[in-house]
Amino acid sequence: MNSHVQLEHHRGVLVVRLTGELDHHAADFVRMDLDEAILRKQVEHLVLNLKDLQFMDSSGLGVILGRYKLIRGKGGKMVICDANPPVKRLLEMSGLLKIMPLYQDETAALSDLEVAL
Amino acid sequence: MTQAQAENYMSVQFAAMSENESFARVVVAAFVSRLDPTLDELNDLKTVVSEAVTNCIIHGYDSDPSGIVYISAVIRGETVHLVIEDKGKGIDDLELAQQPLYTSKPELERSGMGFTIMENFMDEFEVTSEPGQGTSIRMKKTIVSKKALYN
Ligand SMILES: Nc1ncnc2c1ncn2[C@@H]1O[C@H](COP(=O)(O)OP(=O)(O)O)[C@@H](O)[C@H]1O
Ligand SMILES: [Mg+2]
Image 1: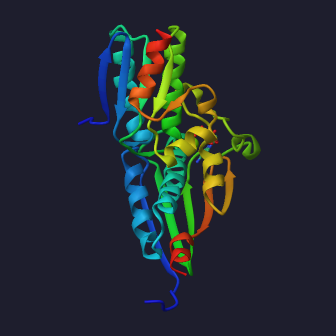
Image 2 (image 1 turned 60 degrees about the vertical axis):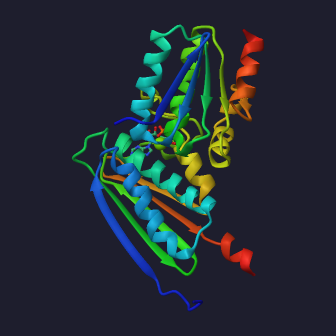
């Protein structure tokens, strides 16, 4: 019943594509899916693709910051890509873009991580 | 039709369950749609409704689904007035609660940005709260942008 998260995993990088609406209700499912993937697979870095995210509120900011801490705690890097203007505005307002880079698209995000690998 | 709009009113109440958050956003968006808001304005309204309702559920009622969340909205001219309330535990320190990034529930991965967002996205925003009685958020936004395009 949860179609919020699409995951792709290659070479230590977990690509997460979020769809639909990320509010407090969805946050619990998204958090569980991501943490399971991060802890079970050999995930070093995380790319969060927000292209198909139709709505997000401050609960989404909490989920993003939580995953950032998890990934950083394991010595990895987390980047965001393809945020639409309303989502970008929230990311900016919360200061999250000061600690996580935002890329135009997945290709740009991945090529930056490849350099970092 | 450019006839002067009479005052319009609606109110809903629902169980304090997280699955009702999207319902609350849709109800308010549908009610306001007669003002012909832009997508940005609609998104602002949905976001503040989501913030206020989520706060009632998580903080006001500590996620107890027997709590009730109340929303009422008035459209007066081009302005929408929203009131979102709970009869939950209330807020002891209103000033602290409104600090950006302050949250009393960091263990739930809250970001502490709810009040900051409501303040930024609306023209007017006011919280009143009585410990043990509940919390009430009053907000106001004038819908302008789309009409300005036609002038
Ligand atoms: N309806 C409410 N009832 C009780 N406390 C509230 C309510 N709304 C907000 N608060 C308090 O204000 C704080 C800040 O709210 P907010 O800015 O939305 O951040 P967050 O929800 O992420 O904690 C909350 O952590 C809580 O302590
Ligand atoms: Mg909140």
